[in-house]
Length: 371
Image (cartoon, rainbow, N blue to C red; front, side, top):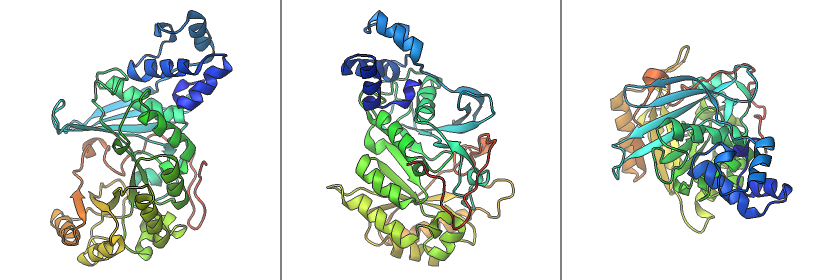
């Protein structure tokens, strides 16, 4: 049993089954996440008999590194084997540093995967073109963060070393299609006995699985990013096929619920990849402004990152700037994402990992979802 797969409540249940008090789970979490310890024998404030039982029945398994690359801009990408079998299954995890470490403006973002591959089949995304093999377990998701904290020169204790300040579910896969495992991982990321991250520093990105957006709103207060990419249904049907199941009127209603039914207002980040001549005209920008209306919103314009066989080109920088200006005139907060790690295929939409069993989401069908 890999203990990475249990949040505090789940770990207390495990320890209860061993006849132990709940506080033992808290101690073990602190050892694993605050001290970065994977060896039960090193957990010195736990009794020797319990340490022996933990060693017999439990593990703390970090993933195996198959490949590691570092970009000229400091971005780092790891290809990590997932699962216990040598079947070649692997995912990619990316670390993006910004600013000088130790300064107030420093930000270190870890982009993690939630599935091996992806079934959403977005037309501009290399990850989606390889299909879906399977969901990651909660343990495999959490292990990516634990591993990266160690690889970046610290322990698993994000409270102190803080190389990683933010975590985004923007790697391989649709996070909300693997809902329960992602929820468990988020709870560990936010738990003071876990990684202790702020709820505003953990972001879940979705292509628009409306029912699970509502569940996330009820189950866990975390930041949300919506992969929008088009201001109307006809174009979004083409770019983001899940739109055919949950069209824009349903999606935007879910976004409104997410931001207004919590006792406070929270911004949603709307991601919009800029495709030359496809979705980047002034008319598209005005339509996007009308779509967002009075919602508390931030739009993140993403230069398209090409991949072999891609049917699109990146919008010119001047066109991106003009599009952004149209939105700003409507007082919509708009940023242009700086492309990072594209020389090592670590940029948005370029992650491919290693997928050996493929399952596509057929248009008009229902994507594979784990409740």
